[in-house]
Length: 123
Image (cartoon, rainbow, N blue to C red; front, side):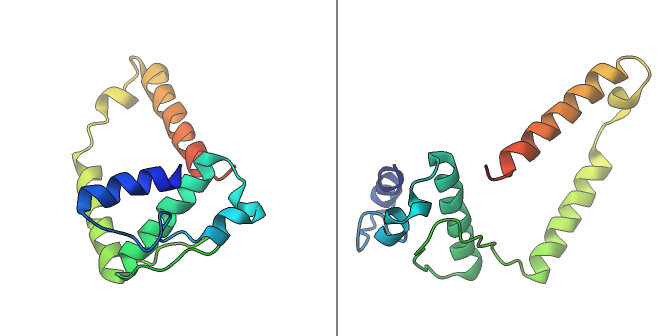
């Protein structure tokens, strides 16, 4: 499954990898960690991709579930913070917190937020 997804991206960019699952080593798939739910494995792949992008270099992932977290530079944190403040100021919340329909609208947002948080948590 990982190789299939990588193959599509590699062909799109005209890149020939050293091996089909690159940069995910075959050792990562052969250990107990490699026999996990496909969703969790793809999430690990995405995290590793983010680390490679953040550091500007490709490194091989030798083991799934290693808990890598992409590093953020202080300038990235400042940009994210400014973007959040801009979006917060632009948010139109009058209809959400008004007395008319508050339970319905706010309840839907809380449920959606909980679903998002649940999806982000590893199984």
